Image (cartoon, rainbow, N blue to C red):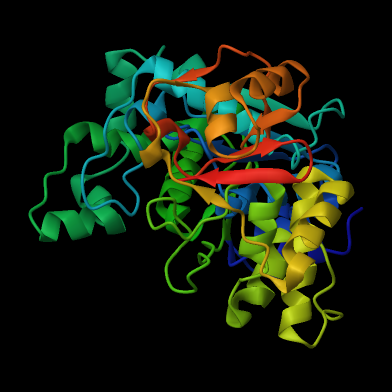
Length: 396
């Protein structure tokens, strides 16, 4: 029987519903956890609408891991079908619909990036499901049944839709299907709990309603905060350039984390680490260094964290990753050529040898093909080119 729920409440904004004080397991998630005779099914869905994830995306993954560590089953849904529409939550305009190939490539990248967080190895602790498995099989009659469970008024109460309707921005009918499809995912996998950011409450509640409609026990919703970015103002976002990518070079990640504004440090420790919040260093600078080392260790190991720390303190400087402007390069360009012109190697021949020897990484991923070619600078923007353990440049 589970009694200590500190892991459940850490970083959690809201759990709903929170009912009465009865002994029924449906009264609260804590009661359900304490009385469950078998592992609960904890659902989290990701739509692979991009190739990279940042530390903000890691927050629900870390909560999934906490449920795994307490004996429950994480059900990670890859929204390969829903990604073709795109979640309209928080969006002021219709999202571009992705191709199947784009979705498949992004999904593979997502799974690779969450491996350091989730338990992929313990039997029964993780299910990875693709919602095309059930959504693309729905016929028109079944889709009409889904649509009949909500009114237009209810759908327009959703924050993003309400704002767009008020501003007379277009809302296409297929976007109304998104909350229903996400909700139907909960029916298909029989989830007991669904995790999501605070902007997902509407969609999770739709899942509860659909589970009732189809004769299943309604799930609990657990809402998590949206991480503020490194600018200290807006939510972490790639488009705002205030993000820290999961697969960034350790030194680059360390540098960004040790620059997190003082007022955000407590939230970052709470959401991105397991460290006790009662024993953090009093000095903000020491807190920043501890945060940087802890998070880099999680994703890259202790040795990489130590090297990143050394790089950040050597010469009394901030540890900035040297930059190289791609404006000087004529594309298409070979990787070994970039190693030469960026100053990492003395010649293209040396660059080719280093690639063959396995000593070259691009954004942390080893490159061994000496014929690796880049058609334009766009695919290299912001990435870190590394030679060995201690030589690297950021391509800009």
